[in-house]
Amino acid sequence: MTIPLFDTTTPLAPLRENILIRIGEVVGRGAFILGPEVDAFEREFAEYLGVEHVVGVANGTDAITIALRALGVQPGDEVVVPSFTFYATAEAVVTAGATPVFCDVDYDTRNVTPDTVRPALSSRTKAIVAVDLFGCPAPATELRALGLPILEDAAQAAGASVDGRKAGALGDVATFSFYPSKNLGCFGDGGAIATDDENIAELARALRFHGSRDKKTFDYVGYNSRLDEVQAAILRMLLRHLDEWSDGRRAAAAAYAQAGVGEHVTLPVVPHGAQPAWHLYVVTHPHADALLAELRVREIQSRAYYRTPLHRQPAMAPYVGDGLSLPVTDELARTNLALPMSPVLGADSAERVAAVLAAGA
Ligand SMILES: *Cc1c(COP(=O)(O)O)cnc(C)c1O
Image (tube, rainbow, N blue to C red; front, side):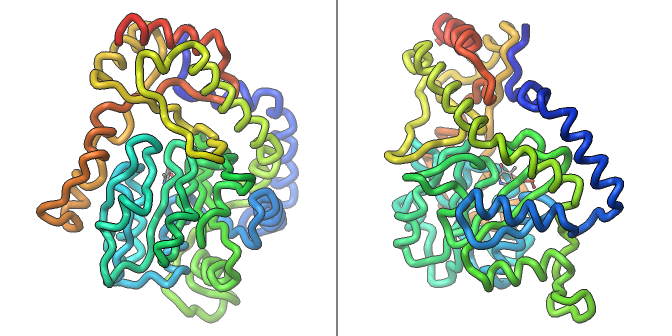
């Protein structure tokens, strides 16, 4: 039996019937955009995260663009972003009109730190994007000491926490993606912005609706970027299971460790006090491609992420200075492989993966 890279169907199976009933209720009500389900989800997700405001938007990429603009980022401003992340993190900076400046990450946690961010700072830096990569929270408290606004890209980290504070409550503003394979995934595209700052929330609300507060006067050139009612109704149901699913992801990581995976490949390091919600369980090995081939033959789905990091992507060439060197990013890009991860990955699967890695490494 194939072990899938993600298992998005098994955890949803017991909820299927009730989800269909809830979708039927939304269809019956006939309100599909910015109605009671979005309002309720925004309240419930804010309460879950422990923040004052959540603003639902159309996807996680728009969430970053709108959050940057709500932070006051303007054309000509620089925004520091890691190169080792999904493309959307930097793309959204360009869409917001700003200039992405790429920085390196820490090898052990794969996240930005004050030390990796510092070389990218200039007098034009307006904000720093800290990605909670693969579901492990970035060190937001340390980053805030740099004195610049922090946008936490928590697209991969719904359900994670640090010292009891949820990922999504760690920066000045945070963004989420509800893409189906994410930790909290809806049945299409969806996203959200989370913040304690009333002004940021208010501006984000206007920007998601064409830059208008009252649908009559248009104060900004904004976006048509709403979370829709059907998705919000589904997310309200799934949110109740997020903590249990995150526990399942951590149990899967523990099962890998128990099965001895760490003897064959290098495991991610969990920062002190962090409870990651492993969206992806990414390990490293000098011969990652050979291991990927071996796993594939044994019907274990695995994948390399970001083999071409963002500072080497064609569209980002205009934003990359001549001498830019990001050695840790290049090393992680070359050596990483993601093992199967889901809330329901059991010890038997972890042992099967470990056996293949033991033979191949
Ligand atoms: C998925 C993802 C995004 C983009 O989210 P979409 O909903 O696909 O637009 C942004 N940043 C990171 C780190 C992601 O993993």
